[in-house]
Image 1 (cartoon, one colour):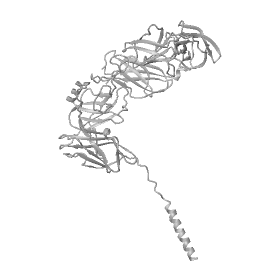
Image 2: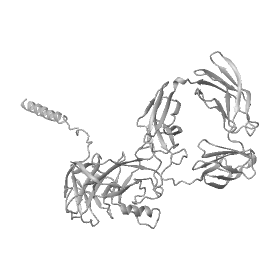
Image 3: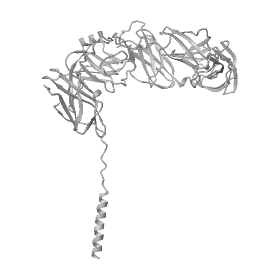
Image 4: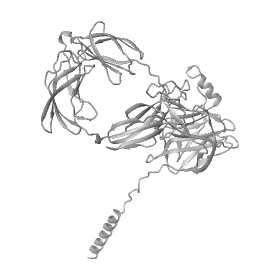
Length: 569
């Protein structure tokens, strides 16, 4: 009996211990979301009389390096990249150059360090040293944005400072492949918002450049996006300094430099594509818009049309079975090409002319199902019409759905032979049924249209808002009769409407706008060509100036809006 009691007691104790062991297991705590913090540096940042060839930065946790070759910047730039590697809970930097005497060097870690476990990135870290008895304390700061959109560039943007004599030499020899690369005084990189800062500069005046250095060769090459200040920039004293993570953060007692980045216009007009898209139909595309193309088809009768952007030409041969074509294409925009084309089936093989079929039929459609009250209802065709152009009477039946009354009206064919305007007095807010019988139109190949019947509703004026923009030059800096281009942009930045306007003249109207948010900008059109022109780095020419209305407009239905856009600098 006593043994049985002892056995039961031992069993209960073991079970209780096992039960306790299953409870209270650690969960690991909250997830670490903080970047690593600097614990110390050897030697300290801001060391004077630096005579070593390496330094070490220790963190509060283990770290990893992220593309250190590109994300660690040194100013003034070194001839040889330093060797950077992790060691213990820190980063060791070995300098492979002989440092200049009495010079302040800044090492910038731009997203180059992250913690080992969670990958939390340290956005920026600076380490500064001096080989002399003092640390330079000047700064230049600013922002780089796109010259047209005023938005930061998505690509990595490098910003460079050069001494004035070196910059003048570089610009004088720009484009000469035998000229030496520019000698940079300082280099940094923009953050995601386009902001940059040069700290710990030597006093003086500099020339400043920004570039998307695609091949990372510390050069500005033709075709690379670039920005530059026309004048010189002067380094100013740093102030409001504060130590954060062993890094001196500072502001400058000067206005930031704004650099407008542009992509140089290195494109040359050329044919980018030409082929039969169907039997008897050729599409020709060009890199830039065409001005006034001249087509010689070697005696073959053809009809051609340009699209709205003038960069696509569609051509139809009047001989339906045409399977090859020799085209001589010329245009003042810079085209002078001879093209030899052959029709091929969709499978890629050639087809004898006797077996050729027109791939696409003759199609007709309405340009609107919901007709804006201020616009025109038209029939559009995918191939030009044959026969006589002009008005076609009694081809279109319009049924007014409110009382079921029906009217036959004219379809007025325009000079392109690919559009016919329906001549009818559609009323705002009403609904109609439009019918076109089969065989009312024939294309150049003698094919009839299919019948068409579609419901059409007409919008009302009160569904739209109206905007008037006055371009004002209060300082009268623009010459008299100087033209600007006023553009209306939607929320995605696409141009909705564009009109030429004189400063200090009549308001520029933008009627019948769909409700929504819009931006307004004006292009100071220096060469009066009706569009924005990019800059020319080799010639030292900045892109045409763009001015934005500071606010976003919320256009509402049945409202009239008036805005003043000031273009004075």
